[in-house]
Structure formats: structure tokens, C-alpha cells
Length: 453
Image (cartoon, rainbow, N blue to C red; front, side, top):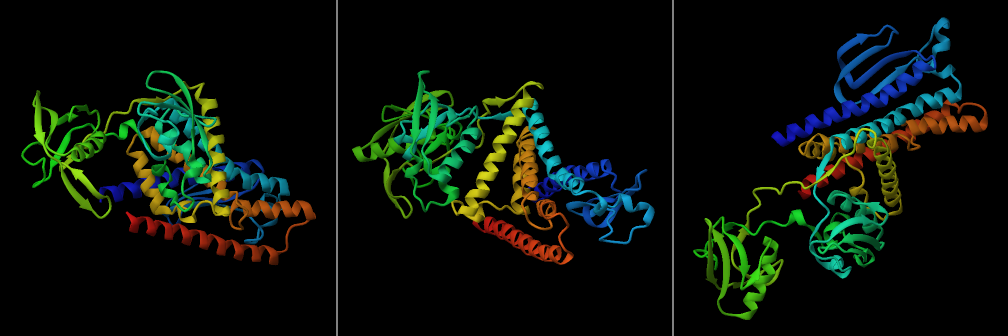
């Protein structure tokens, strides 16, 4: 229940911030152009709080916190007295109307830069981009345990999160990508990751795991968390034992135990497992047991589970000074913009499944809660991404969105007169249908995610 309430809370907070900035952009530019604003509302439905400003604008916080709007004086919506006609939105020039409409998405773009600047100044803790395990195509590229990934293509990767974000587009496109790495000895290397070898029919959500790269911080310490009854380890090993070697081979992570146990089982007979227990070093005899699993087939097992009760400490920090954070935030905004437009292009071309590109409120709520739980810098990151997404979404040429209004005004510039009321009404119906379909897809994806959890 706590997770649910936290998700709801952070969704409301996030939407409140994003919508307020978006609508304030419309409001501010409208007032600068002499348009009378009747109402500035955060949320829809019954007003919970109302105040009237000196300029006559009614400021409202409404009951349903899932959006907001700015209502301007407009002769197309209601009669306007002659002395206020000059303040009506429809009386303004087409360029003034374009500026007012663009101001909302532009405000979200500016907010994205501000949030990323604050994130960089605070400093976002993360994990170093160090390889813990390389299999599949990662092993084919020559990546090894201890390699530090400094860049993916042209993108510098100071943290593991940056590595993942840089690898995802290349994996979606099935395009080989160059990695700049520093190996465990400190030598600089260039590796070509053959992502073109990933199966074409692979689920998009399985792309990154299928590369075979496991970061160092994902490797569990070689500590026994539990021993299953009736297994070879029962009565030999105990919870809390730290495994230091299997049959003479040193062990540094729990993931190394499995392959060593397979080799021990294939050799036959008893083997020796060395552990640290209560400050003492012990050498214990053990014989693996061959078992069969429907998913894994036959394999040798001891019957122990890892101890993942404590997450490893973060060992990397993205931080800049207040001045250096400005160009860093601008670069990051430009990069994220390119990534988002790239995802939209892949969705339309069929390279990415729509269920993996359109997120509904449930998915967004869970994501904001997860990011917020990692600290303020991580929450600023997701809020910046949502702000940028809102800006881009609103610029899509769909009637009812800002981009649809811009399309009307651009047509007006070309033809020299506004579109007819009939054409605009038809566009509104098309916009309603498109938005209803988009919302339906978003809710469908949310339900699908919940079912697959």
C-alpha cells in the first residue's frame, strides 16, 4: 500500500509542477500580448481553491489533478463587450497567436533545462561503468570483467546508467556500436559491440539483458544467504558463510560459484569448498548433485542462495559546479530530445512495439515513485524527462493539442485567412479520436505491465 500511495503522491506532484509551468507559459505570453486571461486552473472539475488576481484572472486549484488549462477571452466561445474586444485572443495577429501557443511547450523545454541544471549541481549518485560479467555478444566483442566503459559511440558514459541509455538506441536499431574502454590493467581499448547479431524478433524489453553485459555492482558478494534443506550444502554450509574458493579456484562474486560447481560436478567425486565463518577459514568437503529443471535442463547444484539483503554503495557521482552545469544541462536536453524523437520515429517505422513506447499514468506514477525513492537528483531526472516529453507531445500536429493549433495558424499564414469553422470542427473531431486512441493505448499498456509483473 505504501508503494501505491507513494506512486499516487509523486504522480500528483509531478503533474502539478509540469502543468503549472506549461500553462504559465501560455499565460505569461498571452498577457504580454494584451490578451485577457479569464482563468488559470491547475486540475479539472470542482474548484477547491480560488483567488482573483489584480488583472482579473481567476486562479484555481481544482479537484482532479490530471492537467490544467488557461481560459482566455475569445469571441468564438462567448460574446465579448466592445471595450474588451481588443483583448480577445481571436483578435490578435496570427504571429501573436503562434507565440502564445508555442509558449506552453517552450516553458516545459525551459523547465527541463532548469531541472537538469539543478540535478547536475546537486549531483546524481550512480554506479561506475565497470563490467562485472561479459557473455553473449559482449564476450564476442572482447569485453572482460573489470573493463571500464568510457564511451558508447560518441556518447561519454561516466556512469552505468549512461551506458545503458547509450546502448538502447543502437540495440533497437540492431546496429554495431564502438565502445571505448579501459581494461583492468589501465590500457585504453576500442571494442566493437556486434548488436546486429541480436535476434530480429527479440522482445524490446529483453534487448539490454541479451547483450550479456552485467555491471560490477550487480554481482552479489559470495555470501550464502540461505541453504535449502535436503541439498548437498545442507549441514555443510551455513547462512553467512563467505565462499572464498571452490576446488582451489578463487571466488570474488556469487555469480562465479555456479560455473565452478558445474566443473566440480563434471570431474566427479568430492570437492573442497573454502569459506570464512565467524572469522575462521574453513575447508569443507562437498559433492554437487545433478538435478534437472524444465527451464535450465540438467545441471549440478549445491543448494545455496545468495545474500542480496544489502545493495552495494554507489561509487560514481555526476556533478558540476553552477556555471559548468549550464552547458551540461543544455547538452543533456539536446541529447534527450534526439533520443525521444528517435523513439517516436522507431515507433512509426515499426522498429519498436507501441506497447513499449506509450506510457500511461500507472507506469508514469510507478516510475516517478521509483526515481524519487533514490533521492532528489534522480527525481529531478525523471521530472526533466517528463517535462521534455510533455513539450514534444504537445507539439504533435494533432488538433486539440498545441501542435494542432500551430498547424491551423500555419495554414492561415499560407492561405491568408483563417480556416473555416467547419474545417476546424472536423479537425477537432479527428483530434478527439486520435487522443482517445492514444489514451486507450496508454491504459492498455499500463494494464499489460501490471499483468506481466
